[in-house]
Amino acid sequence: MVTAGCQDGQMRILVTNDDGIDSEGLHVLARAMCRLDGDHEVVVGAPDREFSGAGAALGALHLLEPEVVRVSIPGCNAEAWTVNGPPGLCVMFARLGAFGAPFDLIVSGINPGANVGRAVYHSGTVGACLTGRNGHVSGVAVSQSVHGMGVEGQAWDDVIKGLRWETAAEVAKSVVQSLVDDMPSETVVVNLNVPDLPLDELKGWKHAQVGVRPPRTVAAADLTPIEGSKDAYKVTMQWGEKAELDPGTDGGVVEQGYVSVSYLTRLEHEVRPDMAHADKGLDALLS
Image (cartoon, rainbow, N blue to C red; front, top):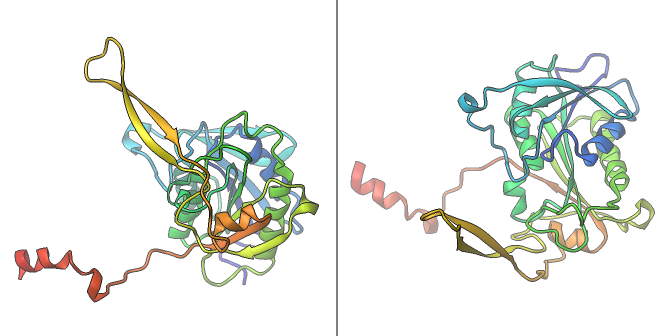
């Protein structure tokens, strides 16, 4: 199926991320999207700075006073813009026409650190695609695992040195190519998590359930008084031990050396008799 924004099979693809316009992962991903087969138009619209953990947030627009700035991506001739807000805002502006004609697909990443388990709720990488889904635009979120302290879906600069970005880029290119060649009639959000391995060492790929927790979590938050500032404290976080993940979950699949593929559905309304306790207060108030 060819969506409404396409002409003669051409797709308009928005590339974004939550690590900012200067992220190496974004640049590698944009260059991979420019190598897709077919005459597709790639536009980069990404935050002007780090917005990791922003989820699908748009920000306080009246405080942001949104601005966009034209930029360039090394080795990529795609049109590129920065936005002074989170990735969800980049996608919203794209949907509203700030970067031209409607987009047919959003590709977000490459995030350094797997977005698995509950990190999916907080990930700006994933949040960009969820924001697109609100406007019936499909998306692919791409993240690459890191060795060592991949905490709550994030990673530190010293950990990501030598990260095999090209592996995740090639995986993303393959998935995106399949979508643009045969776009599904229903809006989809694909969450890809790729092991940090050479491409020829990947064991394959598996569909995976979204797990409850990522490989390593924040275990505690302690308050330390700030000298000279009354009632002000620094928050010191302590990291927990590495978790044993269910092999059928997204995190477990990645740990086994497979690419994890999870299709994220929209929020659903569900009521069962055993979960309707909140209704009692409304009955008392409004009945």
